Length: 99
Image (cartoon, rainbow, N blue to C red; front, side):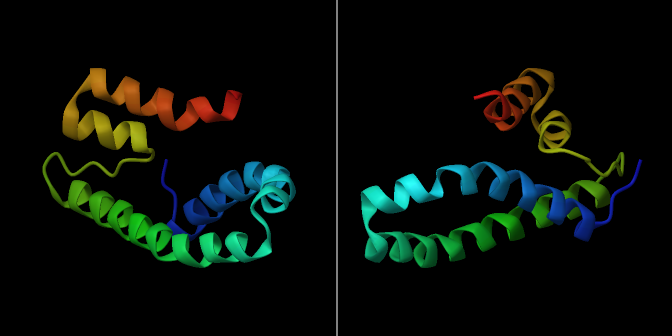
C-alpha cells in the first residue's frame, strides 16, 4: 500500500473540514466575526508548521532503517515509540471520529 502525499493531504483535509464545518456556525456566533477571523488567521501558521513536521517525520522514518514509510500517525508512533504509545496515538487521533 502506497499513498502519494497529495492524496493523503486531501484525505486529512476532508477529515478536518468535514467535522469542523458542522460546528463552525455555532462557534462563530459565540465568538463573533472578529475573533473568528483572528483565530482562523492566527492558527493557519500553526497548522502549516504541524504539516511540515509530519512530512519531515515521514521522510526521516522512510530513510532510517528498516526504511518503512508509515501510512498513519499510529504506525509512525509504533516505529518510533513502540506498541503501547502507538495504541495511545491511534486511539487519540482516530477516537475523535466517534465523538
